[in-house]
Image (cartoon, rainbow, N blue to C red; front, top):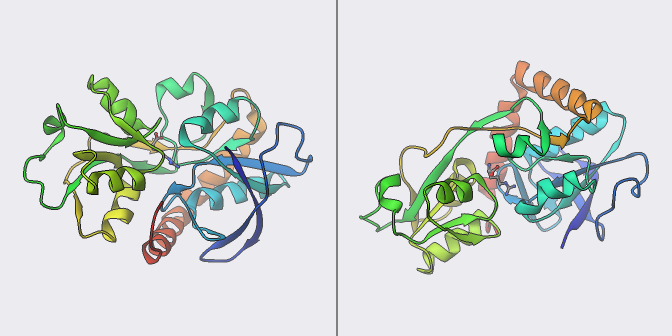
Length: 256
Ligand code: ARG
């Protein structure tokens, strides 16, 4: 089920968004709409609390929409349907802390990257057994479905337990339903900073780069995205936006 959110006001620290019914197919939403598809339970990149959304990715896409002279509309979907929805023409851009992978490059075009990231291991505070990636063998590992944490486990020939968000995977960890969680480092830090029952192991299992995705061959959107991302990186603004939203995400409680 896809939710559509209309971008109606911008404030420096938080963007106010209004949920507006269901998603549009390509061409239906009016020529002036620029539809971003995301999965909004991934702080600090996208995060909803009440009617507020705390987001790095929306901030980037708002600028890309402006560059194209369009109005941004944000749609929220499950992560594993973000890229398929873009490919199916239900959105103009996908931005969801998406890691550039060779596999995904076969179905979409990626912009220049805007963040370097990676995945980490989250354990219960009192866990003395799991110390590194090697200790994941034979364990019940929770991941967000369709993410690089999911594919990492599959590549290790181990079927993970899949959840709709990193926070739900952590809730399962705390409830003893999984032994360990693998997730992107930034949302893991946001969640762990508010939860004394879990901790993140040192070291990352991967090195990844985030970029926004457009439909294959959509050069107009890709050029606008690259222009915006290049400017944000050159001015150092991307780091400021990230720090600002990390602080905002830290203030909020409950990441589901
Ligand atoms: N970086 C990871 C990936 O691309 C996870 C992204 C999850 N993003 C989200 N908005 N839930 O697979």
